Image 1 (cartoon, one colour):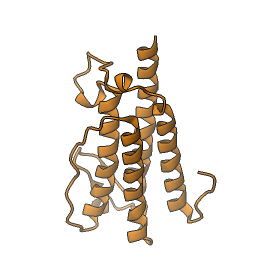
Image 2 (cartoon, rainbow, N blue to C red; image 1 turned 90 degrees about the vertical axis):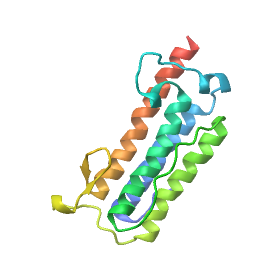
Image 3 (spheres, helix red, strand yellow; image 1 turned 180 degrees about the horizontal axis):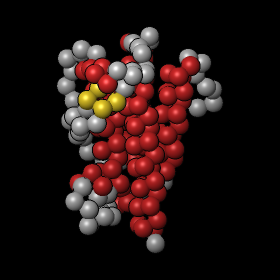
Amino acid sequence: MNQYRNNGAIGAILDEYEKALTELENIITDLSYEELIATVDNKTEDFDCKSIQTILTHVIRAGYCYIIEIRKSLGEQIDFVERRTLNTVEQYKMELKNMFNYNELFFKDYPNVNLEENDSEKKILVKWGQVYDIEQLFEHAIVHILRHRRQIERFKIQLRE
């Protein structure tokens, strides 16, 4: 990413989203297959946080879910994506790019969408119970990637000790 998008708040959201994904891709690039699939956290009850593979699977599915929640709030009839476990870092990197492209497509489909919504009745009630406007949901999506990138960094340290 060498150039910033020039479309205001939408450009900033997409730039930061892409930056977060690039940082995540850089962290996973040198993983071996064994490191990818190794169970690192045996104590967690959260299936999505046991290995780097489960974390990446979760991050990708969530990235699709956020935008699907937004599209549903705008009246689209669209299904959520299924969880898809992949077997290589390269497959995960490609699917992270596909997920980002799907998010970017939203702004091509809705170039004049209102990002901010002050009326709580018009905010998006997502399936996990939180209420967001579009900008807040994208901000959540970006921070979600950052949190899991950090988690993967910590897992790598544990795996390599």
